[in-house]
Amino acid sequence: MHIGTGQFEGKVLVDPKECKGVSCRALTIKEEIFTVIGSRVLEATVLDINDTNGMYGVEAISRGATIARFVNPEKTEIKATKENLKIVGLDPATLTYQQSIKEYIEEPTLGEIASEKYDLIFFEVKGSDEFEMVNEVFARQKNSGVTIIIFPNLVGFNLPKIKGGEIVETREFEDRKVAIILKTAL
Image 1: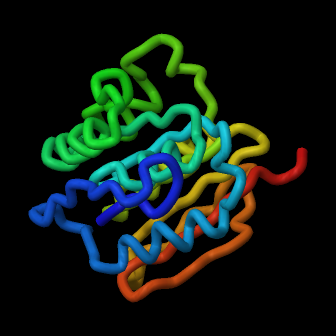
Image 2 (image 1 turned 120 degrees about the vertical axis):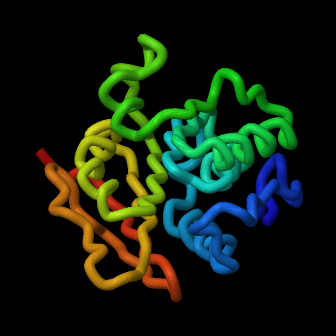
């Protein structure tokens, strides 16, 4: 797996094969997501949740985002994310949080993160229990921002109603679905 474009183009990322949820389609999915969000990534603040190796946030920084924060409760996945940040010359200590989504949203580690809103949120849902956090995660999106939910393409995995949001595009892949969500007009 590698960075597709931007300042880190071509850098090869650590891809922890032992992590469940990694698919050979991940690179294609990432490229399609970035094609859809286009220039919204420029100078964006990014929250990358549950990503197996931080590829969405690292790609966003490569394409012009100002900062990305990475949240993942899985030790092997956050380790891969930290390694990938080092590969591109970023300090993982200030950007990565090994904690559950619920802990990060409800009890952030750092004070300034408690009220932080994001231009881009990448949320990789790996289990049906994580769907309950979709609205809480979406609430952290700026009014002009975009939330991208990546979830298994399985029977029974359907997004809940998004409070204050509208799904503007969905894409379906062999093993995953992607939903692009914007805030609705007030």
